Image (cartoon, rainbow, N blue to C red):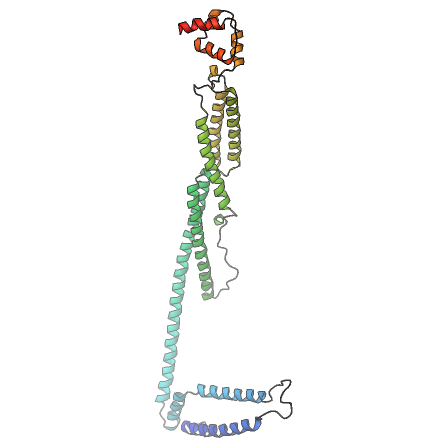
Length: 356
């Protein structure tokens, strides 16, 4: 087949292809067996197709033909034909100049797109660096707000801070992931190996295993304790209504026990030092009030109702009728009603009744 004349080449290729195609078809038909293979039973164990190798060879030949047809440049061949046989180089020269121009334009376009892509990537990288910094400080601020609320025992502020922490942590994680993705693209565009993942997390930003539910429950318990202490503080009061001695003693013991338990709860809480000191100072003041309440009435303590023994003890110390009368009618009458006795008690009551 001649390689100098393009038109002749086409005719020859067409003729050869037709002849080759017929010969190829004859060869295929000659090599293919139709019907069952007489060398093996119709049923039984399957064996490898005897035509498999030939089919693979034909597929390869067809692939070569497709590749040859695809690579043929008709315009290039026509330009060479005009140059060789018509002595006209313009067609071939113009065609090759067009190819060079197309390649140059494609290279310029690719370079421009790459530069734009790199510029956009750098801009996104810078913006994500700013966003990551903002997210880091937002998360740190949320943690600080929670610690402050926890230290003061403000459960409402703790709940708000927990919500802020979760929101800030989600934002920080998202920006961190996006920044890591951009870092990989930046390194790839610069031809640098990505290596290990960048450690963007700051230990200050981690929850460090904080159990917010437990801490919030503790704070709620302290809040409930504060309410109980306020109520208890109002109950510890010395008034002018005498109470039974047993009731007075029971009140003192209960209040002191409640105060001691409250001290233990405060010490074991997660309150800040200042918050603990404030509550311990209040508990000390309450304890002092209980001690004052426990004192006898003449020394400022809570008065108690007198029993028969109390009246009898006083009466036994009075020797004259005037001494009895000085106690007053109400006291003498109460002593008699309680069952206390004195040889001058009735006479003293009679006189005191006339003087009342």
